Length: 420
Image (cartoon, rainbow, N blue to C red; front, side):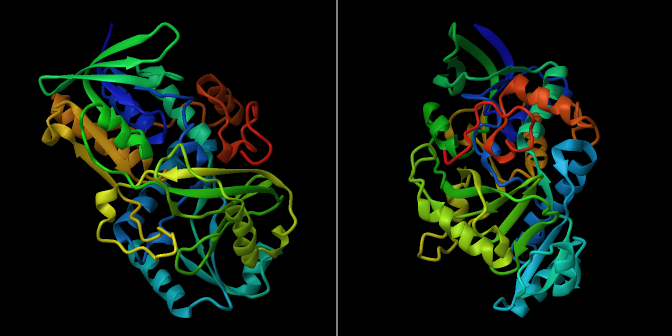
């Protein structure tokens, strides 16, 4: 039997970020991850550090969170970030009014956005489509989630956190309205006795909650990413139109990641991985960057977004399986109202805003536990981030390179070179 003040279930960006925040405040915290760190949604993203421009006209609050998080991570995350910059590209068939709405919204929210001509955009991206009429320059960037999570884990551990990997939770014991024990499937079997439990398991959150007798619904959507051989792409390319399949290309050194679809699935571990989704990425992304046609596929993968169903109840679906009206915000669920007083789930959100999510979750738990002290995660630089080689050793220490950044992190053992 091992006692801990706070147990965090989930070793993605939000779970590890929350553990780091709590540990820096002096809280005894234990992280539990069923696989390697970042092996769920976090490491299967497209690797974009949002500027907020994508959401500026549709979700101002979310866009403001993104630009705030973007600026903070540039300060603390070093070589977890590649400051590529970004372009929102208007092709000949795209709506002038949509471009103007996005531009005005960015400027109102303080997101740096300037307009360049199609010719200027092609000077920056020589193989950009001839039909590109103009582009908006925004502070997007690439993010390497394996490095980011490993650096957060090292910081958490340096402040006293304990981290279990390859340790799925097999049972949760609830007694008198409190979680008393967590059973972990480790080599020797591990029982944790936590004072408080945080569920940060992304699209699996409802399944973990049900083990404690708590009922809520997630609405996961799958998205495909395709990494192709493409050297020399500098900025992130976004198609400046209403969000749709295949409207983003992210540079990852000598590769480019094409994304993505958005289709609701019943289970985040069990869904079809359809070839047509990969083909659609080439078709749609190829409208912006025709030179990707015929490029070699390095690997392809799918991720599931951790979307909270009640937030989506009043949103419309396109009726063709496209769930792009879904919110990308996050929600804290205090399960005291569900009869389990020492249990909170954090659901929704984006990789870009993980640190904000972690801070708010840690604030809530510290309020419950009576812990004084403010978050310092926005000020303290993450360990190892000045040296990519150190970061890559940390990735190996806690997991392995995940699909998003397998072409960047030096140790690529265990990563398939084709469709997985």
